[in-house]
Image (cartoon, rainbow, N blue to C red; front, side):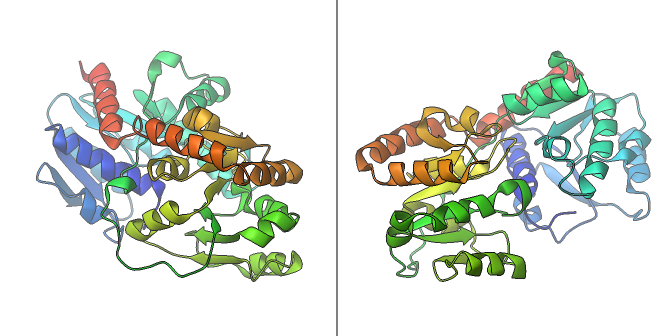
Length: 348
């Protein structure tokens, strides 16, 4: 389903962590176009191509039936077809990344399908991994999942471990960084609107949006109507270049209405970049006191918090130090260790 993205990164890093903990397994896939697939290979994990393109879950069920007692099947996403998985010897673990589909059901028609498939997947699962306490609480509240069936496994970041790229970023002057997709609940529109209202922000900073694809015609029209088209640019970048933008940015702005975890703030903190973020979802849980927060639904709040924070260098230096210390607690090694702990709960 995905060529690139946060969930792909999660499973790539999880497989690496399991391998380093001397756990072996198989990766069952129909998609070799995924950019994270090569990085997920290891001596301990074999990539197995599924042959039944019409009913892969039937084939997965057959393969699992051939495995010895104590095997775990960990699907990479929700599917109603998980009910086809048979085999009393196999336990199933499902990772829940967020509750965006449930909380913003009216925003996209496809969210209804995600909700239906997630509900079936949760019912089928023997155990559930949640990437934040916020998501765990939402699971309990919305789906009445017993707390003892859920393990919180925070995500990690290793961007700060990558070698620094030698190529220079363009000489663009001070900039505010935005990372990732921009539509819907990501709330990019409120952010750029707040920016356009501030003479101080426009005079001193441009905006660079990394990833998320080129601006759509609708986005370009909005930027033109706000008279900031010449102040906002979009680029695509690999991990090494992204790390360089984090290091050079005045701050990362993360305006999402809700997040199940939110990797960019952790990446930013690990690279000495100030985080100014929404108070929605799990973001305050992850960033704690190392970030400044605004009301993502209030354009004035976004503008005021941005202006006040970026004008206070002493406070920003304090935030950088707190962020560096906090980011050390979010590692993929800890994600793998917590996952192994959950696996052991259900296989004994």
